[in-house]
Image (cartoon, rainbow, N blue to C red; front, side, top):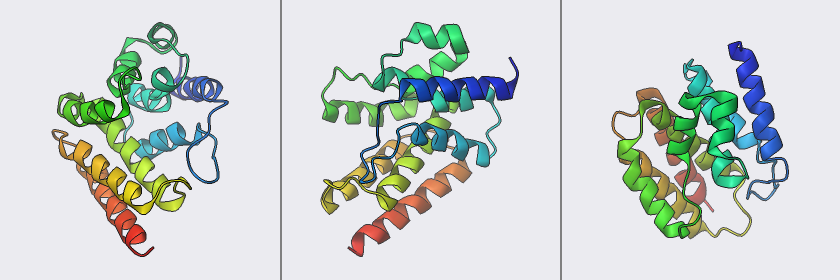
Length: 180
């Protein structure tokens, strides 16, 4: 399978899996926009590894849809599956515990998973800055940025360019939130 075919297949797969989901923003944007933005951010910043880009497109499928690990392995291979599993929170745990575990596990992520996680946090902070969920008060928005920073802070050897972009996005979020 050519690189572009595998990426398009992953985009289609993720779009099908997330087809009935919406983001929490006020506009209720289609969920698929998020994994596409995560993969695009990686590609713009020089990530060429096909498995990383495919895993970025699929990073929420096991966690947020009926997708199984076996499905991803059969369609996209073991390398992609391993990255997706590193990105997957255990939804059977309470939200607070999942957030704590993300901070703890950040230091143990593989290089590929660190890239995806960093891009995921960049996109999430951008999204809540430009189109926050309508039911999130200012305090919750700021707490979310704090938590994202804590996760990234615990990463070992994060990509310098992506980390700089993350820091810039967090700075812009705080400036925007503090002006409201």
